[in-house]
Amino acid sequence: MRKLLVMALVGLVAQLVDGSLGMAYGVTSSTLLLIAGISPAAASASVHLAEVGTTLASGISHWRFGNVDWRVVRNIALPGAVGAFAGATVLSSISTESAIPWTAGILLALGAYLLFRFARPLRPTRPRALPRRFLAPLGLFAGFIDATGGGGWGPVATPTLLASGSMEPRRVIGSVGTSEFLVAGAASIGFLLGLGSEGFVLPTVAALLVGGVIAAPIAAWLVRHVPAQLLGAFVGGLIMLVNTRSLLRVFKVEAQLGPYAYPLVVALWVLAIGFSVSAWRRARTAQPAVTTEPELVPAA
Image (cartoon, rainbow, N blue to C red; front, side):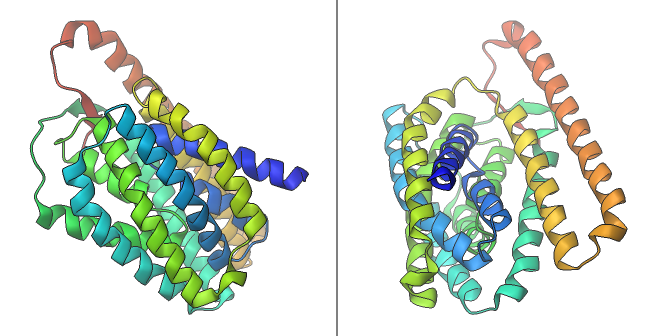
C-alpha cells in the first residue's frame, strides 16, 4: 500500500509538471519505474496505459481554460499515434537487456535537451499557422520516441513548437497535452499486442492514473502562472542525473566513472537552473515595460 501511495504521488507530481510545462509526465514516471526495478517495456507500457486517462483529463481541462489549438491537434495527433504504435512494437520485440541502455540513453538525451532549452533566454512569439508538412513529421518522430523511451512526446513536440515562435506557450502546452491522448492510446495498443496484458503492471497503472487525474485540472490552471522555464531546467537535470546512473550501472563502470560523471551532471544542472532563474528575473523585471509585446517562448 505504501508503494502504491508513492506511485500515486509520483503520478500527481508528474502530471502537475506535465500539465504546466507541456512535457515530462512519461519521462519522469518511466525513470522512477526503472529505478524501482520494472523492465523498460513494462515501465513504458504501464505509463502509457495510465496516460490514456491522465491525458483525457488534461485535454478536457486545457480545453475548458482555452489552451487548445484544435488545428494543431488534428495535424499532429494522428501521425503521433502511428509513430507511438511503431515504437511500442519495436520496444516489445527486443530483450530487456537490450532495452535498458537504449531507454536510458533516450531519457538522458531528452533530459539534456530540456536542460539546454529552458536555461536559455526568451524571445517573442510571431503567431502564424504552422503547415501540416511540418506538424505531421514532428508528430511521427515524437510519437516513436515517446513509446521507445517511455516518454518523449512532450519533450520533443513542445520545445519544437515553442522554438518556432508561432504559438502562445499556453496553446502549445494545451495542444500537445490534448493530442497525447491518441498517442498514449496507440502506444498502449502496441504494447498490448506485443507483450500481452501481463506486460502492464496494473496496480502501478491505477496509482499513476489516480494521481494524474487529480492533478490535471490544477495543472491546466497553473499553466498561465507557473514559470515553465524553471520547471524545465529542474526536471531536465533530474532526468539527466538518474539516467546517467542507469547507464553507468548497466555498463558496469559506475565505480570508475561515477566520481567524475555525477559531479559534472550536478554542476551542469546547477548552472542551468542559475541561468533559468536569471533569465526569468530579467523577463519579470522588464514585463511592465513590454505589456503590449507578444508572449515569450524559449529561443531557438
